[in-house]
Length: 129
Image (cartoon, rainbow, N blue to C red; front, side):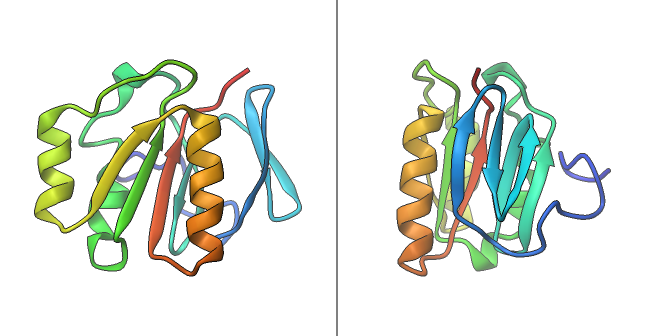
């Protein structure tokens, strides 16, 4: 399991709109997933992060590794605001990726809009109850 992904293959091998969130999980692509998600240009993956204290360079490595295909990266941090630590913000900036943290609900809505606009977007989404 490299770079913060919980398996070697995605739940869905393509980007997809997030249809619903809450109750500790998400619905997308006609399926449901309990736990957090990492939405990347090459698929939607289970993400082992359950709280903001677990958001590290290692947890975000899959996004960093895809820096050449991402322009925007959203981090849904649950319900409470959380500023992205400067070391992580710098890492995204060095890759030319605009990164922002927000409540998971806002991140889902923003991700869906940017995806619908065919933007080069990714998201890390902490599941909320």
